[in-house]
Image (tube, rainbow, N blue to C red):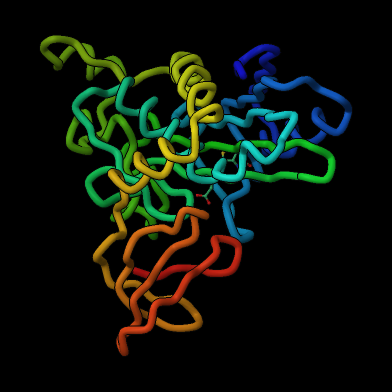
Length: 254
Ligand code: BTN
């Protein structure tokens, strides 16, 4: 199941997920990808917004159709595709996954995934925001300590321009452009969307950033203990009870 054709790129739009939803509802085929240099109303999970300076993040939405029972673990598979893409774009990093949909590097958020689906109509829009070259001072103050971009990883967060990076680096190393990142992500997404549940679960468990960490949510707290085969999160509460959390239901705090 390939991604990237057709590809619609917007210089500016409200949300690539919103554009992709319009396209899928109008009959756009599987594999359609929408990207933008800038979003004015980027959507995050649980009603949050997603912001990025123009041209400094990959803002990407892909149409998956038909969506069927082979894709039950899509919420786990998509972040794994982002991990592989980010590691191909910068071989010096190791990505981890923070249940349910975040991609972390060095304990900071590099990327997030927002899947919007209508299973009854047989489609999903896979929305991905991947920080490419946002310097730490360009993140909103509340995210400065918790967000990172591929540039930050490459250059220790100093935030040079592409020109400065080219001049200073030896051998030269530039952050990838959104177009390059799109092509790399298209390839990894195609392979993870078709992966078997066993492979998805094994890779997720190998990259699990939460396992063993103390977490809390509105209904309680405990130590994260990996994921079920369904993709739900297992938490061992203080009294030893095992609690199973579904991604739609909870907002985790670390
Ligand atoms: C999250 O971590 O909360 C998910 C963020 C997903 C953001 C991306 S950016 C491209 C696509 N279009 C949107 O409006 N949202 C997703």
